[in-house]
Length: 357
Image (tube, rainbow, N blue to C red; front, top):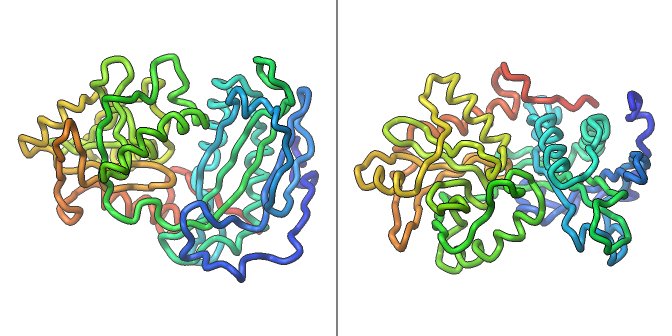
């Protein structure tokens, strides 16, 4: 599909809703931009790639995504550089991860041309929705789901791929408090833990609700087999600084392959920081805390960016970490990563994609 941009049907909104919105101060995921991209897969072929005004979509109550959960999604962000040009951060990595999730959920791959060229056309059209205030960005949500009108248990033959966008502020506006759960499990080896599938998040909501009721922001998940080794938080990958070494759980198929995680580890290694990707038990973290060797903990995710973790509750005891002012790595990495995203410093990794008008 080499000339996809020429084949995208574009229907512009009659009147933009932008003047009604304060895009620099939008609640996360509540305000949506003027347009959305929709691509349809029917009987083995991708067709009807179009951009239309954001709005409701018609669907049957029998679509297979509602009954059997063939639904996946991604998350990325658009920024503006000093010249006001739209920038995307590692969209190719999101496309590749979407298709890894699709493979696991027995869904056909989304062609690179539809994902990348469709995304760029959508961002060009709604570029004015990208906030100008640092800390606020345009969040991008590609979603992909089965649309067969059938309640027979089998892989679907019809799908929709949609991209919507929304101006957002910080996901976490304060340091994060986590609670370790030994009651619930997020993923098992051989399951769908590595896939960014909707069901993974649905299964985490009760634990998250109980965490918030107890005064915490989210859950710190342990492995499903032994309930011993740290995996991830409900909204992000995690890392711990013990004895001046940044340690993050290794990818075993039960942890999301975070793009921010990969970016952070790349930057740390290039800065000469000692990094370990390995199994890390919650007891090892608790022991390091008692010895005064645990100096930082932080989350890494597209929505959360770099989220400072200041409290971890384990078996009724709060581990309260040093204040941000005393932290060595996470603040430095945050500043460097954001500078790359906004085009303020050189990008030697080829991560930033400029959207040309």
